[in-house]
Length: 184
Image 1 (cartoon, rainbow, N blue to C red):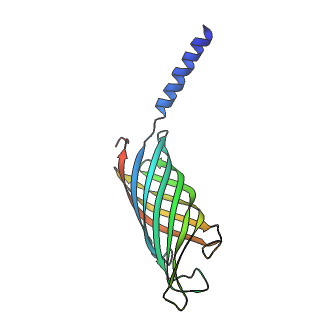
Image 2: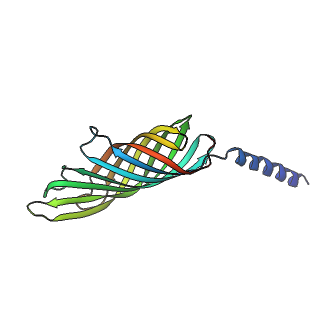
Image 3: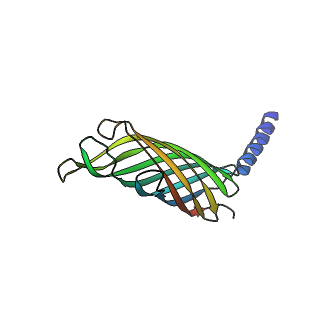
């Protein structure tokens, strides 16, 4: 009898604790634009982000994106002319909301690649490698919109011209929640 009562009390307390910790879940689309002056590349990107609320002010995040940058930096000794770099990251993070302000460190994996011109020819080489990625975002949310600044770094870890290369960028972003159970 005491075991059943203890089990019932434990279940009620546990269920109440879960209900009290219900957080804000949402799905967002973000557009970002490189900030000139922080890097030589001009570029833009798009991200789809999912947020799973934990507690009143925290969220576990997952994002999938694509970013494209153009520059005249060299990737290979045989390169000449413009280079385009692209990133396809899958990032996991934690977003801490402090009122309308937020900060979100992220880490993940993805593809670092691009296109570069062969020296003395009109031919281009398209190559990509597996990359480790990480960064941080900070911003401000107003109703369903979010605005902020993003930093992301990638390190190619495979062979080839992109292997063992570092690439990082800083961007401004704007996001819109497509779905949200937040109470505004």
